[in-house]
Image 1 (cartoon, one colour):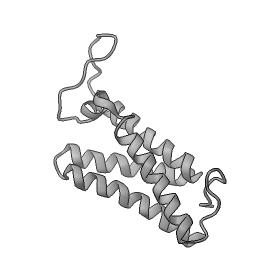
Image 2 (spheres, rainbow, N blue to C red):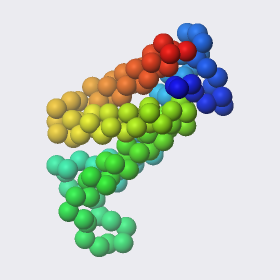
Image 3 (spheres, rainbow, N blue to C red):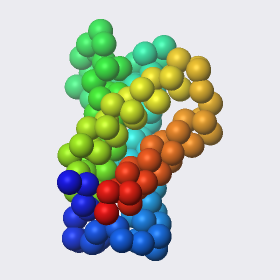
Length: 133
């Protein structure tokens, strides 16, 4: 049920493959949270900040931040889905990433805490996969 894709990973059968899976998930997180997020998503997903200008120059939708937060979290969910092969983990990533980032945007967590919570989410996925193998 939680078996990762065979490319690049086979079933998680030992600590080495568990660490390899965790490393891949953290790499995916790094891509999604930094170069693939960009300034537009980074600033625009915060409901308390000034919404960025749309490319067409038209007025922003009232709740633009919801679209941008959702898009950002879908990027993360996509990486988790591709790496683990699990739709369940992808959906969990989407929901958890949304909650964690919303807490950061509300000032309830710091940047560092936000990043650690995301990494701990990935650790949780790997532990579940490892325990079910």
